[in-house]
Image (cartoon, rainbow, N blue to C red; front, side, top):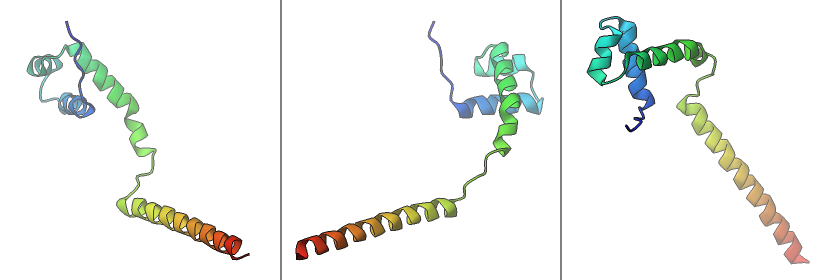
Length: 92
């Protein structure tokens, strides 16, 4: 018997269906061809780690773009200093 691997997105989908309480764990197990204890394990993990979602600050696209720009400006400044150094070294 091969061990199946499920994506995080699939696991979240199943857990959210369980939490919605529209279907029982057994019904969802039949629907997704999973053992009910597997669904229960995923639900436990999800609830246990759900608080950590709000612990991390969320980076927005603007801050990521700003970080890239800062990095590129730093590289350009460093290269300019190196060019100036070599110009002085060659002028002697």
